[in-house]
Length: 617
Image (cartoon, rainbow, N blue to C red; front, side):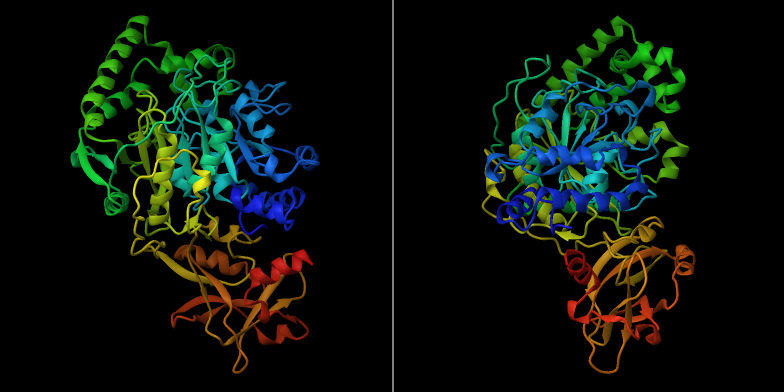
């Protein structure tokens, strides 16, 4: 694989000739094969389909096209010419003759689509598992929800299958999945990106969202995708607005809700302190108007707009809908025209209250993106109530014409990610991205689920027209890495079980998560054993001539160790590894007899380096 899928890094590789779009797409196809169990796809483009987009780049120079050779995926309620759009419902599917306006802009800029991604059916849900194409699995721990409705789009970016993706966001669908997969989620100002060619959820509130590994990449995509569209009646001409100061609002303590999740509460406080240390001034605001507006989305008459979008189809094909989706949208028949006007009048009053309260005191707002995260089993047992709690901090956003950027902000002890959202007035999208870029680096070290390091310095050129907020960098936190949760044990892996390699799913599918990278003490030799695929390493301890070997230490639920160990073939087994920092860990070892005739690959320093060299030769 390329060392990085970040846009600037791929473009650098294309310029110097170390990468080609053909090579990148071939390698990504192999990674996507390994990720099939995540249920992220609705339609994955064939090799021939992808190569047609690659071939269209022939004769073009990298610097001609801002997204030359950049791979992306598309939520399957957004049209891609010649590929079915299902909105998560096979019976609804149609094949568009032209791409959505926002997709066409990306194609014209040289981006390469890889497929259409899974979603909560008809973009109704914040959990990401209401789909006939299978429940999409969280990129970090598949036992937990990935967030929705743009679940597949977020997981694809977090898992290293695409540089960026398109989602949609009506009630939080472009932010909650970002928080649950440790990536950036940009919910642009409503009307900034065209929704022409998008299956509507609530048409007056819908917007196309952007997922990316960094705020800089989200800004690069925004620069291509935005623009007024006369064919979209909700499109708006927009000039960037600034954020004048770093006075940021947080809800009053009694208005903050974490639904019993003390670690999310701790991580939110740490994120607020990072902003303060960078020169921000925290102001507690009355969050009541925002919360009351949020309740209007599903408890008020706006659910009728969802019925207006697909009601005729649902009445003819009731069994085509997921039961929970059908239950929610069917509620749109209840509100009357009188209810709709009363709701609109109430919304206007709440918007004015927020302007005269919060926005008179602050220039941006910081909230958790979600108050907690749930397991798939918990949501399946209580689907509607738990989904509503996930919208506590998101449902008001488009009602109030606000912009938002979801930013990774740390990890719970069990390795599950936490995120915050920076909220600003309409057209402050780029200013929020700059603040988000700094906060992102303060709170986490790695990108998505990839265990790849955060770029050290934001690329200023990628944040065109962003407004400088402070000369002082946000300080790094004292502790950023996941910790070993109760009921888990540490397991050191040195080969195909490492992150991104063929057997890594055996750890993730058991609820494992990455704790840290490390090296062994300099007392080991590494061999490439005969057989495969996949080719396997043999790590043995030696009395003399040893070296330090790269390993990854994973947290694995204790009850899963037996089933995992049962699948380890001889001559491999589990034993105690001594690490370079003096710690010890349970890990893979090989019986010495098996290395007779095997290739000694110790000089590579680790299995990943050996595999990369082996595949390229």
